[in-house]
Length: 101
Image (cartoon, rainbow, N blue to C red; front, side):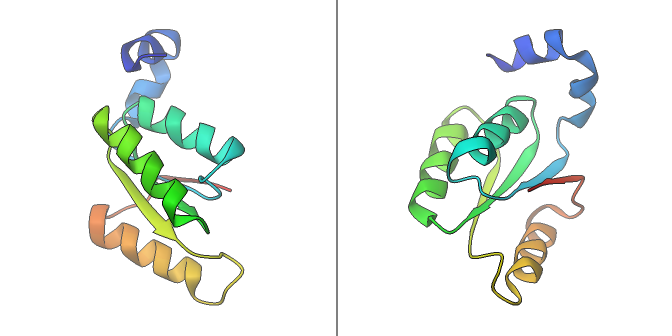
């Protein structure tokens, strides 16, 4: 579904364009699908997961469509990983608007 179609189908989502989201587990499954949808409505999306190659593929795919994606590789169970994710997001974009785990 194209970005304009998303805005027509869900006009309230247009207000999220340009905001920052964090999606964990974005290298596959529901996390990946969520990242694609959020990027499709114009959000800047930080994507996390343990498989860096898959996150980079997602960044390249969505980047070609004009999306701003920040791949962050790491295991959330490891101490300090989440702090590092949030630090990277703040350095790149500032405030985080929503997170999806």
